[in-house]
Image 1 (cartoon, helix red, strand yellow):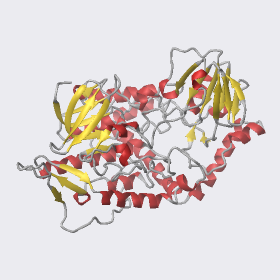
Image 2 (image 1 turned 60 degrees about the horizontal axis):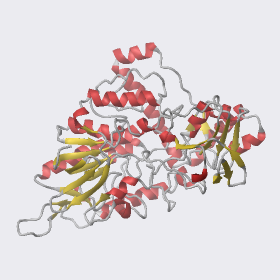
Image 3 (image 1 turned 180 degrees about the vertical axis):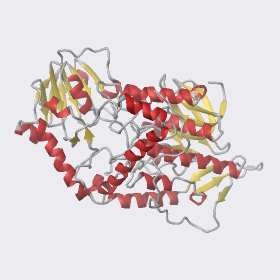
Amino acid sequence: MAEHEHVRVAVIGSGFGGLGAAVRLRREGITDFVVLERAGSVGGTWRDNSYPGCACDVPSHLYSFSFAPNPDWPRTFSGQEHIRAYLEHVADVFGLRPHLRFDSEVKRMAWDADALRWEIETARGTLTADVVVSATGPLSDPKTPDVPGLDTFPGTVFHSARWNHDLDLAGKRVAVVGTGASAIQIVPAIQPEVGRLTLFQRTPPWVMPRVDRAVTGAERWLHRRVPLTTQARRGLLWGIRELQVQAFTKHPDELGFVERLAKRNIARSIKDPALRAKLTPDYRIGCKRILLSSTYYPALARPNVDVVASGLREIRGSTLVAADGTETEADVLVFGTGFHVTDMPIAERVFGADGRSLAESWKDGMEGLRGATAAGFPNWMTIIGPNTGLGNSSMILMIESQLNYLADYLRQLGVLGGRVALDARPSAVHAWNRQVQERMKRTVWNTGGCTSWYLDANGRNTTVWPGTTSEFRRATRRVDLIEYAVLRPADSAGSPAAVTHAAAAPGVPEVTVPAPTEADPGSGSAREVTA
């Protein structure tokens, strides 16, 4: 990285969000940008999570960019290695390699109000940027619980997102803590080889069968020869999930039928009544993310597996003690305990116009204008920001909507001309979030009777979007300058930076979330990517 390098845009992270932003920048004619990546390759969470059995629970043709369809997905639900290969190909096909800066973890970035730019300190040097796009993602920093006595454990300990591939699990006593999306894939993958497997389950998940199969050669041939069939397949998958949204967001009682199907799924594989009772949730299905697996329950029924229906309380050497007093001996301890989602560590490294960190600004809960910008942090935008997560569909749809917003944000800066910055007005941020939280009140995530990683420390849902992907796309299609203060540099006499009001009328009008009026599962022209 060149000393005192300055770029128009700095993108942080090279997962789906960061690579998507890079592609969009090039399509907008912007080539003066870098992608700062803390690791040595692209892929984000699909690079970091390489545990046995790792795969996506969203169909492959929907879990890919609309502008980079892949006709050669090998399975309907692709594995980690195929998704990572896809992202590597995106980097190649769209000419992103010259923009990538590996081993460049961002240590600190601060807004320079006089120069109207971001000063960024990385592991490989410093640079400045007019605009920062934070695409670190919510599933990037593993969360490991502070269990008393952990330092006394003589065996091997690691998080599922930092899998120890050098360790041979054959014949070992392995304990897995957690029952989230990672754990339900790890357990059936390692069960046949370990000597004993103990699963510490604080809360049982709802699990439905994962109808996965190999994509036939004829299907792949058709998708290559007739690209419209790939688009049609994607559109069908998208449409089905759009129709499901109201049950999650407006009418949770409608999920009762799905709950009955899930209970039948448990009964088919678990014949022991005591074990079946342990594995049956007591909250409304959908309150936590519905997990997909056809091998999880059969694995738990195997004779070398024990389910402890309690969280891990403490560790005494090689003895693991559950909250209910159950004691288990283990050689290996695997934490499948999720990530820092509502308290992302990157927020502690971002310092805005008033010198406060983003973490301090968000101490009472994350808030972002249209899930993208934060008051007091000019020319800073996040991909997969507050209340942009989904409970039943593909995050790629939300990412692409945010890329639309990013593109218009940069166009607005160009129209305004000169050295200029946009800072989200606090009133606009609060108005947007007030309506989002109002809509959240009747969703299954708030009323379903569970505690999930969607909720922050204050019990507020700052993670999930309470509507359809079409609604979000319409809400982020354009930047409304009335929601922003326009900042100019200080004049030659040293007066403060000028603030231009985008509208003559005082105050900010109520921010409304438009209803969907069109089927829009993707945008932009497509360039085929074969992974």
